Length: 272
Length: 184
Image (tube, rainbow over all chains, first blue to last red; front, top):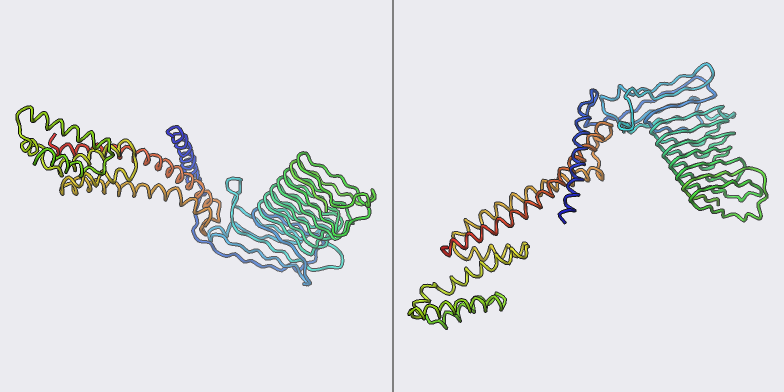
């Protein structure tokens, strides 16, 4: 009992010392400031110029992109931030000569793993619907989530380090999706898909298999659901420690056509 | 009062004691009477010297309860020891109950502080305040929470040790109190 209490005491002492050292370090930071009230941020902007590609970058903000039957693109930047921090956030947008709408949330505040920034920020981009698909749509954020809905693009690249990615009704030639720790959900994405994930799960749901699907994750599961069982497909499935389950009648599927490649180290793979 | 009357009354007043303890005490007092008679004293004189059986029984019961609390530490046993000591005299309300209530009050206050230090940071995890939306505030709560849990944990363990020490010291004080009343 006494020995057990001594060990527990040492643990609490360590916890206390780490906490105190952390507080000393925090208060010694030159730019440290503590805020106790939050203010709402709501900035809206209309982009009248025509453009064929879109490039969006942010650090901590979530990004959602969709299309609607509107004549001009609309940007809406919302969130909850301390009044003193409003100045450190800036929404920048311009249409460059090469026809790319460039949108960036400039955050002058430095973000690190210890200071990831926890503003609740959200950038919503509504693009006008066009007959021709957009040439390139690139969306990148470091800590936020990414979502896209009803978007047509020849090439799409959606990436985040820590957030989740959710794409729905996205079509085009080639869609690349990448996240390090978040989950990826693709629903009715009609394009050749390339998914790269480190720790999260990957879920892909399609009405039918028309394009290649390549999904890779280290520790997560991969679930690919195709409503209509394909008549031909190339399955390239591999996991180091997990299980592979294919719910289709594989004898009825000819070898050929689109490829489904799913690789994971620790997770399970399910094709249904 | 004769030896038999003294013994009968003492025996009935010590009915709460286990048989072995009670019989040992009766044997001791019987021997005391026999020694007195051998020295030429009458039973009445010896009984008068010993005092009333009620007073003797109260002192013996208090001693027994204190011993019981020392060998089997528990809140019930220390409560019984205190009650038995209080029965020795009205002034013990001041000299026994007063310090005891004071100590218990101080311990409850310290335990409350330790529990608050342990629980509040955990509460912030489940019910985060609105101020937690910036990195600094998050880190402030993280490090502050670690320091708070660490301090609360160390305080709890220290208080456990302090409670055990105070328990023993208070029983020694009760013993001293009983001996003082006996005039030893």
